Length: 397
Image (cartoon, rainbow, N blue to C red; front, side):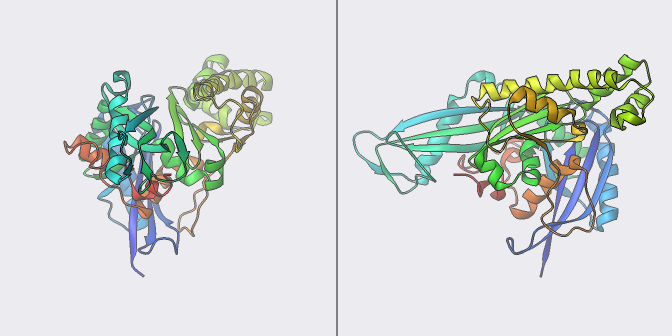
């Protein structure tokens, strides 16, 4: 059976990761499997932003070269993630009246409603920003909520609620420049938390309602999922590197020694355990406060049946689970990647979740151009009803 290859590229603040997966041409019968990986220390990045595309491109080329060697596949293009503290989510609703005469709702009517939602976004949410995901959350026909799509239903009015994920235009342009310097084509760009959710969360968790907290090197993101789709995405410039810096200051040691203290078992260290815990917990409390603010903003305090799932390089140790359970009054659990298929390369580190999710999106539903077409001058979406990939459209209502 013919195989197809997909590449996921996660340019994180500390490490650039590349994953190559292989999947059958006929989706659904066999799951993608990892056939190659590559990574390199990130240069030219800060808090998820690319500050020097040429330097970052060098790191990217190193990671790609390694992935090519392990997979035996020449990498010329891939699916890229966008993260950083400028990533935001916003929800907007619009009501379209068809007048006294009832009509049969068509796809054009749905597209018009989605376009009106985008037009209604406040200037503060669109200035210097690009929409990278446009996700319908719910529809109403004549004021009554419906399940599924309203296409083909008779109505005198149509209301749609849409969730938009936006990123800074400058950051997206930097991603394009970096890919160009590295000699790579971008198939599409996906928000990092959404890419990670593909690799980490089950359908039942996303449908019941859950939060996904990813603690990275220089940023942490928190997303809320309900009814199978994301309803909130936010990022804060706090990461595990801040914990390392706090330990270095608190114990007057080098950054290398501080990193060793952070990741080692406390009983094996020649430092007061209580003081280490105080330093680590103080920074993790800032992360919990950030999560609490997102939950409050979206009216989900204590209202996520599947709880909060925590992952990322900064989620090691039991402190975050204990603190989050106490402060957020919700179930909290650390999670790792759920591999669906047999893989040639073993990956146990959850920090690969973004790259792996990107590769799965590429393998199970090639991107439609979306944000890339926009940045090249082709317009945001030819049809605003679609998501950035066929894979993601499968879970829309």
